[in-house]
Image (cartoon, rainbow, N blue to C red; front, top):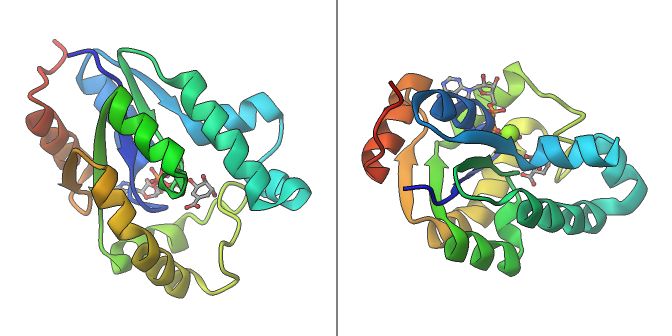
Length: 174
Ligand SMILES: Nc1ncnc2c1ncn2[C@@H]1O[C@H](COP(=O)(O)OP(=O)(O)OP(=O)(O)O)[C@@H](O)[C@H]1O
Ligand SMILES: O=C(O)C1=C[C@@H](O)[C@@H](O)[C@H](O)C1
Ligand SMILES: [Mg+2]
């Protein structure tokens, strides 16, 4: 299988971390929409949102998603990629979509330990644990309807990679 693999899920579920580990375990290359978007624009997510608002960031995100999609790629997406119907449709039509699902306390704990505020400016103005709960409640159904597979992302990175490889029937790299 060489179809692109899209990793979706909430901030802190591990799309970037697991995506990188997955490409070491199989013969794919790693791409991250947040990283490419920031490199191409020369601005952090926080800078873009300050200058253009979230609509400006979302428009750039859709362009980036399309530009990075190619066979043999593991694509770590931004947590809000599923908000746009065009992105949901694009990922389902052009690859295999995996939802890294983790409960609110796990997500909040990870984000509190590593906030990375330049890449994760506040979405609601609320404290992290409240924001995570509110945002996941709004988005969980969208992650689920977009996903071909749902994987427990609260396990260790090694275990999450194994779950994905098994779900996709992917052979490990030698
Ligand atoms: N399975 C895991 N077990 C323990 N810690 C993890 C796991 N996955 C990710 N982390 C940690 O959680 C933090 C957030 O992970 P990561 O940046 O990969 O999330 P993300 O889904 O890409 O977030 P964003 O949507 O903001 O890009 C990092 O510090 C990472 O080391
Ligand atoms: O959940 C979100 O809406 C976001 C998650 C991050 O990956 C970034 O894409 C950005 O901070 C927005
Ligand atoms: Mg990420």
